[in-house]
Image 1: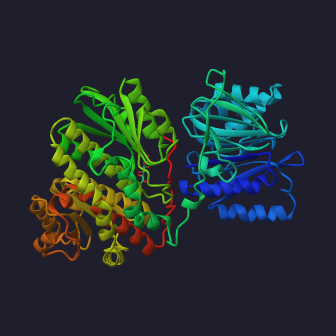
Image 2: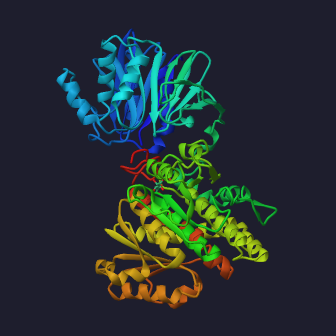
Image 3: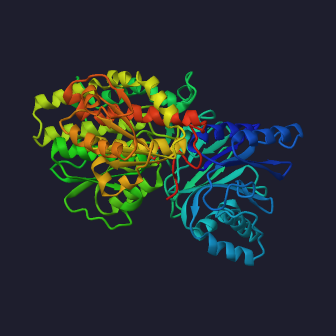
Length: 615
Ligand code: F6R
């Protein structure tokens, strides 16, 4: 999603902005741009595609001395929403070359505003919703307002979710910033201040951060920051000291971040477990805070991979604790007028803590009177700050767009919630609870064993890399894994893939089977494997290429499979209960190797963003 960085009061501001934009690259974008002020004039450089293109242009202009001595600059990585990917639509967008604005989010009423501005003689050069912002600023500044007053009038005009930064040559060394639902951080320096879409994008400049709250706007000067809330009342916001994460954000010798993030799971997942399990078997999740003083049902909301984690969570919580769980797509929740009968709380799941769909679902649940809880990886993110209680994934920054280690850490937390609820409401004895904690403590070494299958998965990847479509099947706890396996494959390899509950095939999707269509099943012997094998056989009989990743018992039964990967032997309860965690590894490796074979951009796949801050 779009990323915003601005620097005020430091020499070579443009270069510092570029450093910040590089740190936002992982979020996904398709064009970039930067504006600084030189000799009283705005200087803007933009380009389609990756930052390297912009940097090339910037270097050239620096040589031509356009950008010397600038101490104010703002920059942007754009993920196209309104208007295609093009030079004109890239940000910063300007008005009369005196105002420049960078913006993340959507101005929902831009069409009406655009019409009015056109009738006043403003010339629109882009197809974006954003371009109304610089023109509105221009209009109000021409009426005699200063930057702060003009910004406030702009805020009164616009509707939507946004975070933006505006600068004007008429008010040198000032920036107007505002946020509504999209994240924005202000960094405090010595005689310098900085703005970023997240704290990490400016942690090379400062460790002192203020997060604006929703509806806030601020006037940022070199040595003064004035913040106002949505009622235009002056407020002070807490200064937070963050730790630079620079050391953590390297590929550590791997070719891609995704590969590194898959392989570091045995090392980072103990960070998740150890923050919720004390003395080997005491789970420290506060069930009262989670909304379980009494036995109620639960609603889980999330998007994408986090939603699939939610489905696994539902299966575990219902199976282990006998508590009914509804799982909803965050983007659907508030628009379908859900019933909250029997519910006391909502649990949202979000790696980034910034997905706007999930944030909106959370706010809606709050309005309905539910307690709000979250599983998040990014501490200090908007969702983290808005919920009553956060459970942190603790797996460190995830840079690859495809969720890997954050998915497995979400599963670990959901499993511990299920076990903890099971104990509290007497579906589990103390001994059974302790046993389940032991199982989860065995997970890192089991994941390491799953990773040893990489070479066999590579062979499958080579075999299916040219397929037009791939089908994933799963039953029970491995049904959500079929959905996740398909999502992972399609998002980074661009091969069409669908996941189905294996038993559903005969109700329609089996019509898709033709010669050589790969049908992939993850399976463990849990007493119900025969049904899944029959479903696989039905696909085999219609010509599908059968790929089975399973334990020995299942592989021995499915003698018809074309490719098999036999996983290590684990204790029965461990294998069946934690099968979604085990099978996440081959699902991730398969997607990764197919994408690598096809030469796609594994870490920043086309059209995708790491942090999806539009609805
Ligand atoms: C897929 C993926 C996405 C995210 C989804 C929600 O690999 O990463 O489907 O899971 O956009 O993101 P978060 O968890 O940050 O709310």
